[in-house]
Image 1 (tube, rainbow, N blue to C red):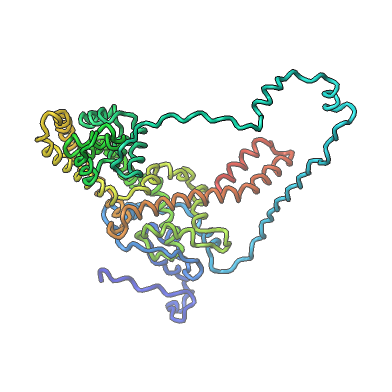
Image 2: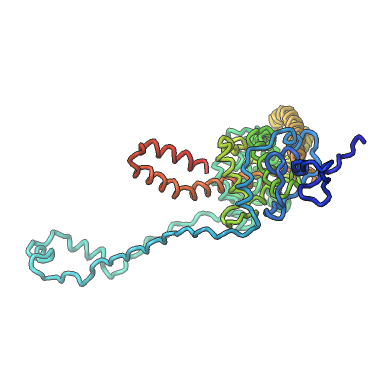
Length: 507
């Protein structure tokens, strides 16, 4: 008999109810059968059953099993929140209600027409007392008429003889290419010889990232280098572009050295930005999982959805179901389940209204792609490998690259340690991102970090907007209540306003 439920009690008024023995008085009717058992967050208060056909359902995606360590496992052990189910039934009933009187909105008045400025013909010259009449009575000013005739004469003056042109420069490089190169040299503002010395010294106080990038764009090609090598004329007659190319050609594989210098210049800032992105991702995951207020809000959503759906999901729901709260409308089309959630939280647990303040890193995390961070790690490793190759290649350059090699060795030793540390940190953050999906009972491969943060961020924005809508809707009622409180002489006006304001704020 263990495990077998007891037979149901006979219903009051049933034909199969037993007659009282020996013709005695009829026994009092038995109590009604108990409602089906509900989970701690399912059904109505105290296990109250709600007719499914009378309520509008919340079309959420259910979680059927509470994973260990997930949010749903925590909520199963907690007591249900304080919710007025009768109010929920009235607001989200399928039974058509009388339409509420439409709120009269006073239309904006049309802007007043702009008056045109009075216009008309100006005062004609010659009127008594006008400006010109006064000038005619004065003596003419003293002017040099001869100078005026010389300056404004119709006789064309002879142009000065043109200066003798300088000796024409020899141009080997394409005109457009040469012009762009000379413009670049104007921006760098450094003679080519000093420029080469700064690159070999890898001196970031003399050249910045933009300057090195400009120099890289105008490194001579193999064809241009061959043109300059085969030139047998006077080098002094060559243009600025040709002289710049000749200066770069004095250093073996100068383009590779410029790329190495560029990697060194950008390394610290790019690595700092990479670590900052990892910190944002980790903070966002930790904030969501550790926020008690957010967990309490989710607890109320689970209870409301289980009530509307007759307890069909007492375990949990998929993360994207949070956005369906604004799609579930009540009998009054202006009221959504999200509006009701905000109203419930404001009335019963106002301390939870600021739960978005616990998730300060969430919005910034939506702009970060873990795949892009993985590509950055590969770029760091690839760039470091090229730098090592350049260190080996310049070993045969002789004294010319001695300072370059020494600076590069020190940089490689520092950069390798930094890249290793950043790689390990990326692994830790990736595991934290996977745990965020598991926290909501999701598969990380189907609900990646980017999707989870976008959904949570959208939910926070919707919650704030619906709470503001509730406050705006309650504002006319607050003003009317304040007016009535002040008009009643039996009430203290200031105290009544404070009481009314508190009541309306909780709406």
